[in-house]
Image (tube, rainbow over all chains, first blue to last red; front, side, top):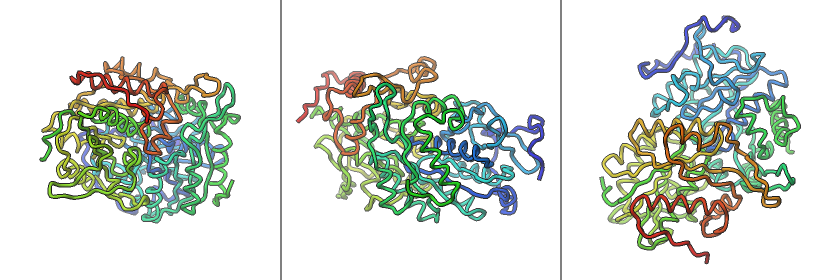
Length: 295
Length: 272
């Protein structure tokens, strides 16, 4: 396989424009070769929007990287791609090589590789106003055409719901790799209700659920240390119990984490004393161990 | 299409998930329906994640069919609701549909539901700019749509998606009524200091609205009672009338109804 450390600026740039025809689905053999070096594929799902899927995907990637793993993130949220900014590579471009598309490398040592529609847009505010079939075609390309190389973990960040993106991602990946999923929720009933449906999606599509993360679980006032359960409490843990899946932990609201994501900083490396760090580190440890344990 | 009876139609949109679209839709519907002479319809087209039934205290309700079509589920006599949530028999039921099937249901919601004569149709949407959004705009093209209220939270991670939604509205020529910035700061109930949990690192909705020449309808602070009321299916406006968040929401709803020729001011909903 071609070395991925060539100067990518010399390679042709991939851009998604309206004039590009819908691509022909690639042969399975091509997909297999581009995924051959990927050991584990982990989907980050939620029925609910805005619970922190991209946050958990990003922080998990950073934590696994710190533990010495090679990580890739595939962002299949085509309408609202958040990952590029969270890793401060929103202005990067995707280039083409003989094996396919070269992922964008985040982090100084290129230890995290990314693919997102965010890198393919002409302008960052361009809306991707596509119906299902076009979304499905791009997702297939993301799975088959990206030259991921050797990765310990490929984390897939998804949009909320149980629709085209989810069905297509699972269909494209499943023939080539065993798939596992982490589900993210916030504590309140309105979120948990959607995540229950996502659990059904996992069951129906044969996705192994590694566990549930309860995000935005309480806020400790930095001035007086009073804890307020802004989005209620405990719903994620109860859901895990009810569904018979492991509970991976509760992550509190942490303005420093929000700020890190805004600035594209490495929260895991730079803010180990911040309130969200212990829970995020614990989640990553459970993934590394392969068998989530009760906290 | 049986779409005659809506005097005003408002879409509640956001590029971003989890910013409070359904919360706002529910409160807007309740706020407008506080006046007995106003007939309000709340249509939930979030097919995969229908939150509206729970927020309106209608969990477990089912849709009934009559000779004149599907009957909306009524919260009050003048406030009817429709959602895929009413068509599911169990809370674990997932709607795992691709675009065309979702579009079909949305069409049915508009065509087959016997809404009657309605003053305000509020439409709650899922996040994004995809099938549901294209379809609803297409199906409403023959009706008069007042426009879209776009919900965001202050941080750039949300705003970057919301700008795409604004571009979507401009592309499909959907007027933008304005933007609501939700989760705008949190006041600790104990020490009363403010924290910016979702920091407006690029100037928040205010700066974005200035840059894009769009109206900022209001900013609503975080209040733990909002989530609680939503979970319990109660009206936050009625349950916590003195909250700064209630005051913000009321002022936004008030300005919405005033801008559309409703001359009498909204009466405060009395807490029973």
